Image (cartoon, rainbow, N blue to C red):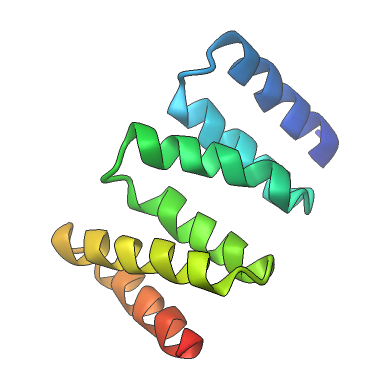
Length: 105
């Protein structure tokens, strides 16, 4: 399956079930894989709003903001993801997030 078709597939699923955060997450990832970064932002935001304790969309949105040169927005997402990583005892993401935030200083 080509990458373009991957986003088309998930876009169709989102169109049928717009409140499904897993479809939105998959669509965002497909957009990132296609270098359609701005298209991915709102879908990651949707996931965060739907499940505020879901760490992964925050990490990916933070990294996406870094890629887009939006440092202050990246810092906010990465800090919140770090808080979740600590609260949920995810050691590897915690290390990665601390390193990313250190680089932003």
